[in-house]
Amino acid sequence: MKIFLGVLLLAVIVAVNASDDDGGFKCTPGVRYQENKCNGCFCSNNHALGCTLMGCLNQDPKLYKCEKGTTWNEGCEQCWCISLGTLCTTNCGKVPEQHH
Image (cartoon, rainbow, N blue to C red; front, side, top):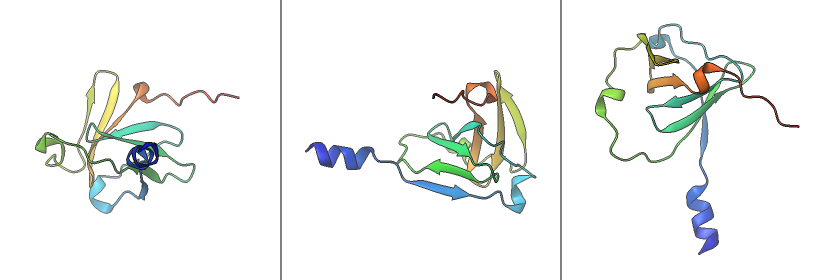
């Protein structure tokens, strides 16, 4: 049972490159993002965006139907509409400190 739960909690990560319809979005290395108010994302040193692929239930369809290339703020977070849908920074766009 514990192994089964561990497998369920394991999130798959995919690399997503910005496409032409992403309005020139380029992620900032080290900054954490959230895709469609569900999946966590990170930006690698070569500007590749990697996001978890959790099955997110009861999501607002507006998150996916945004106008590609638009940007806006939600409090201190910067948001973009890209090919994945809505993508927003977390932690006000600050790069988390490395723990040694």
